[in-house]
Image (cartoon, rainbow, N blue to C red; front, side):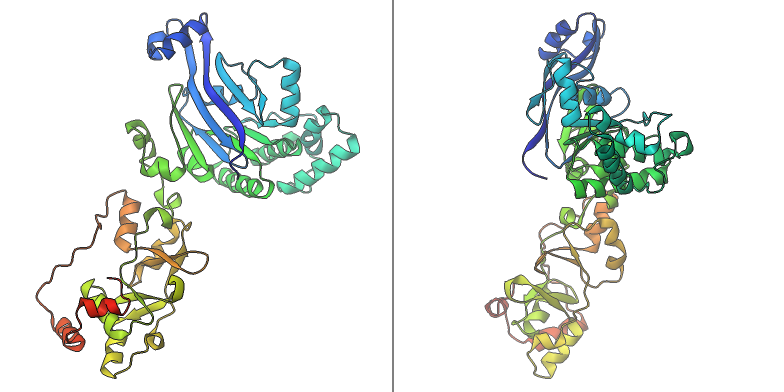
Length: 433
């Protein structure tokens, strides 16, 4: 994905009725959809957004929200009442029918909910149809169609008719036909909503794989929030003709723009949307490998934990140290912390989904460590934070305040072992408390 704009919509309105321009004028002055209903139906109201090259941009909303009308304005199937659309810099709004046909052939193709296959043509001929319309030679278009049929997993089905295919296979043919046209932008209107849940999920996963391989720009319409969260790089939420929020799935889920969006997302499976990066906290129980066992025990005592992360040069995670092993090393007058490190700690990357953190967090004495591509510790996910995120409640971890309770027997041993090494002496050894 780049910062280059593939599709730009600016102040789009679509009004059905006798006096559409009068309705637009009233809406621009602040009238509501209901207040203009006696004059006509405002299907899309003042919609503006940019879609970047290589992005999957999802438009989500309930029935009647205006999303299908919006997508049909993006390729000129519906003329906008007001506002403008450009695809790859080519204007769609106000363009002649001839020029529109040229833009559709070269820049934008569409995948429909109900397949729209030609029933008397084979799979191969259906896939090649867009290329036939473009005037591509038969041998060339059939060769291209065969490549795309294999790409969507329909090898061996080239000579079948649509009536011999399952719903999922028909949708693969529709997707293959759009891909074969080799346009820069794919518009997908509720493309998977007629499919069974398992097939639907397979198609969603395949779409992401294809988009990653081919780099297509995809604008995907859906009423299914989980589908939007799974597919979208960004999501536009529509209500009553208006776009009420545009953001990443994480933005929509964790910072809804209003009560409507908050209600919309309350039942989402957060574990399959949020990542480690969205919930991780700064690591506090951390010491450098050069600090030694006494410093490690001091940090563990102050933070009331039984283990600490150990980092090497450039904050690369070296492992973990546990209180019992550090205490044994102090008693034997040893100081090489590297000798007692536990390298078997759970690490994840920032883009790991929360669903994949649950099992490893259960038996871990330490929070899950989040590392970057160079192995550097960039944050941690404590178990309480993970559970709070999954339950959509605040973990209230905040800044840690240390309150000295009466010493337990174990703490008394630790204090006696540490002697008079105060915080200043600890910090001189490079310890971050």
